[in-house]
Length: 381
Image (cartoon, rainbow, N blue to C red; front, top):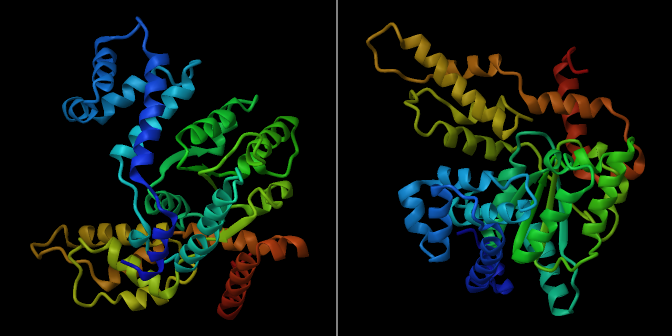
């Protein structure tokens, strides 16, 4: 176990409290959702839910059938409770990673442990009812969602996952309120809002302005948010409304960069660990040739290398092997999404205030420009 995460014992996360929160949430869900208009599958689900035999029901019926039960209530006036139940079940039956299962991110891990979690504990001890809100930003495909899940897993919290696009479907802001209400009800939770720039973009439409104001109201603690860690994620921080970045809102920002050289070596090893690699495969060389590539770019390169090797050896009787040449050809074929992102970011003008707020990103964009200037890449912009 990484020694940097040992201080988490200080936060005294109690599994018993989590179980109580889950039970409370489910009891209210049962009392409101149960009615006379249910088919046999739903009756079976709720009957075993009341009896506390959900594990047996899931083994017999399967997770997919539980989702089928909940889907009936997705857009009804019982939507809050269907969402709450699904969140609880997702947390119970879909395992969450912890920090030890995340490649890289060491600086962000330390920052979150030493600043965000410590701040939460201090606020609780001081009787402050504010929660915490952080923003993960950076190139696409670099693991922002997976890392947010690991924060929940590391601190034994229930993970609530909603994209801003989903929240924005309800122009009245009802879905935003529902998500925060559920997070408060559960208490010890992470509320993850992906693509948050879809709500918190610089306001150009009255509807988006209203949704932004609704989000601000929830973040500012119209109701106590203690125990709720809100994590927003965006690939496009330049679209964020500056009011969301003020103190007490998303005032802790963490840049999620493309993986380092050492991390890229680990990623190539990880994504190809089940491949029949030949002895000539050199992960260090592959890492050298993939600077500024994202996690997903490297995963795609490995998958494509396997396809190339299969096609190359399909007509022979030789045992299929993935060679260094296959990886090299795969890298030539893919169009890294992170490189496209860097080229776009490098073409934008950012004022001094933005540059200070997102300094780590600006530094890597500068490195990218210098790297491509040295290569004399005419396709840079």
